[in-house]
Image (cartoon, rainbow, N blue to C red; front, top):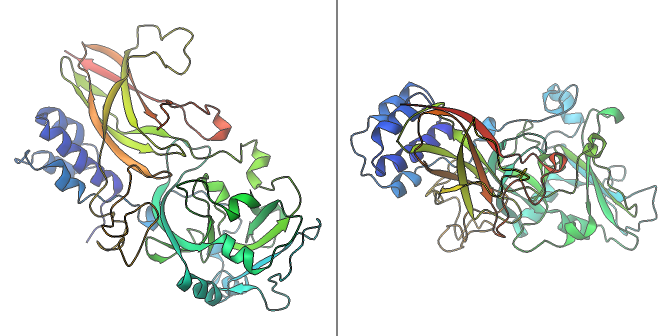
Length: 427
């Protein structure tokens, strides 16, 4: 049976939202061509009274691992090495090893380092022994610092990095953890990241720990997704979630060593709150509300609402207002969490026996929605306008009442521009 895509599921749910509002003609045109012929048939569904909640229960919310957008580096790509080279590189669960040592170029003190050379490096069986005592699972959206839309949302599972750090008996003079992924033993291809040691050892409020991740959506993480083990840092953009992890240095050096610092990126930027369109109608009818749908990414301060704005192309934009704070924005609806999260997970994948950060342990439902560092769907109606040419914009507002692209509007701290699409409205 063919797996349905995120867009198809989104369109089913948001189409029903509009049908429930009695907008059959508008949604038929909007959704019929959006994701192919199958949706055209669904747009003619004669039962508009089916509740939004019942369709939300069927929403495929998580991204199937093979459908994530991919940003990767390495030549050749490490997971595409021949089988015998994969084994030798530690790119299989059988041969994976993690070294955790003091930085040889600083005065950091480590009482019991984990090294390959003396056979003490952590292997996959050792990691699983730790996981049986304490593993962590949470939803996180992977998003690239310099791309305008998220790459995918998954349920990530792993062992807190700090549990491994404590095993090496860290001593004095440690300010940061530097970590590295395998890249063909070629210095020019090395992919590295870092964190303050305080972030590794202690979590900000309501934030999961930094983990050594070995499962995505309940399955062993693939080489393409960074397996056998990768870093996952809940609040960070994708570049810090180092794939093919094989080494951690504890250092007294104050500086970061992140690969992306050399690309003029703000490497310490938290994920931002933003909204994006999914349905982008190019045409509308004068005098009729305009149905719109999209996604909202929840940054460190969450999402409280999503808004849209329709502006005539022939009228000037607000003066001295580069972020359109005074524009006549219109609220749309953030859709509730789905009944089952999909992505290959069984229906009972989150519950008392399989806890997940941010979810009620008894009911298996989110404690709040949207969850930080994850996504939500939105749908709504832009006000009816006269015939003409317009720009459509959408934005998200965080839980502190600050509207996108603020409070950090700078491109190098994460792409957060207000999205704009063109719209022709005909009489």
